[in-house]
Length: 263
Ligand code: GRE
Ligand code: ZN
Image (cartoon, rainbow, N blue to C red):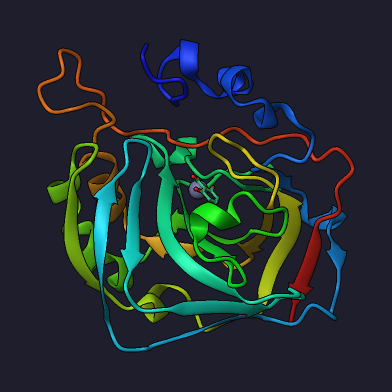
């Protein structure tokens, strides 16, 4: 395969990523299985604070060949959570499973349980000029991971889901209006925090991970819309490859501490 990394073909799948991207073989990788009874309570962290314009923002929804991602024009800032610096939202994207939500799809697990969907809100350290520059820095990134289970209809996400068919293939983009507030609370009072990596190559180990403790819901039909709208492959490919199971397996903790804040 021409791709040097992928999820779907044995030859370029996660166990081989380190061959082209050596950082993927290091010892502080993400995602992880968060074992709640091993996490260390730290009340000094304080809640996660996300500030920014609360009006709906214009933005772009796109298929990058590995995930579906949204970027917004409005500026949102992450602080709190024991972070030394403020971080700026670069965008958010989704990792998910296949047509059977019981088989998982999230990257992080909680007590060995995977969820069908995980959204990553990627923030870069505001002292760097942009995401590209921040990715090269050891204190470059902070990512909020939000897990979803099948349950009640998710009104906040539905507007974006309706536009997925417009970005079925890699490279496609469409404009969207979204209010981050609706799916990322301004204050998150329950989360896990640990030092890890990008979950995609280059797998650089410069991410402060904040995984929300409260699992959100999405209806089964909404989940089905995600797993039936998108492709890894270009239009007209001899073998169309639906975008499914775009998650990396959990990685060894190797003695890292997972902190928990709950208030
Ligand atoms: C990803 O590609 O999945 C990713 C990023 C940046 C931070 C975390 C992450 O691009 O999982
Ligand atoms: Zn991600």
